Length: 115
Length: 113
Image 1 (cartoon, helix red, strand yellow):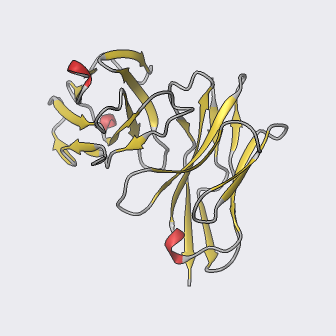
Image 2: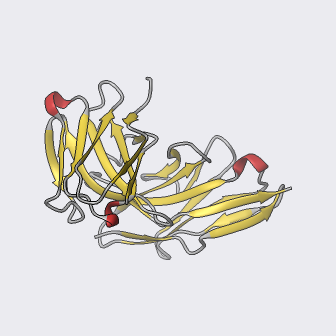
């Protein structure tokens, strides 16, 4: 396994702009998760996919956020009309199955700064 | 819904001293419990987990945690820490559907020589 990769690692954008992040999970991991981590806090769940199906979304995921996982491989997280409150580290994780049974492997994260 | 409270934001300790990082959880259903570690400039890694069976679980690098259902706690302990244990430690729970993890705010362990 080459690990979970995320791109870009850092993104600085101006308020009101749209941004898109990419996550490439470990191959053959059918579950993919997105979390958001702000300074001094632990990761907060945003959404997860089982293959290409998005099965759960947190209330944190406002209508400005959209995530996709076409063909059950990589995933993208798009934030439209960014706000300063969106500044955070966005983490992606993948696993073979249920969180209780299979370890979630985390990527290095994408740090978003909205100016 | 589940929640996790890590009572200490930072724990400074001298090398070779024992340490305990506290974690309490709240849940109306059975939970599974995890400790993740984040070393400087690295991603989160699973340290250990409790699913069922023995309430004492151990990691390969000498950490252990004990599930205490009556006190709703899952404290992490190590009898003798090393400089290399300096990291941020996150306690997490998953409900018995196992669809996601709920993390605490994290505890920064600083090991001093």
